[in-house]
Length: 82
Image 1 (cartoon, rainbow, N blue to C red):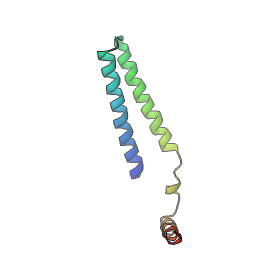
Image 2: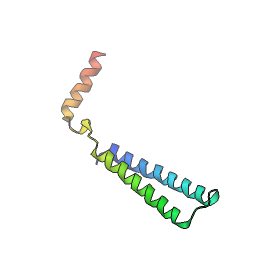
Image 3: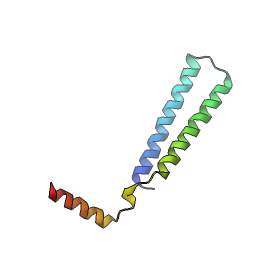
Image 4: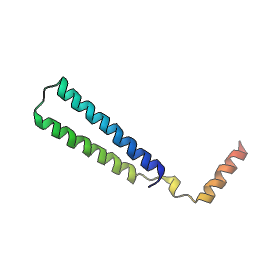
């Protein structure tokens, strides 16, 4: 797991935690719901988080496939052309 993946996972977890807490506050303060709604809300948030995380991990990242020496050369060659 590289730094970008770790940053994405931590950011996704924090975002989904904030969304979950906001939903709990809305259900607790303004919308009267049955007690099972809180459980379904938690299960839904966890499921969405897992789906997004798995999708992101399966998405192909071309930067990992390129040779580091070739990438360095391409960056330097690109700077010279500008």
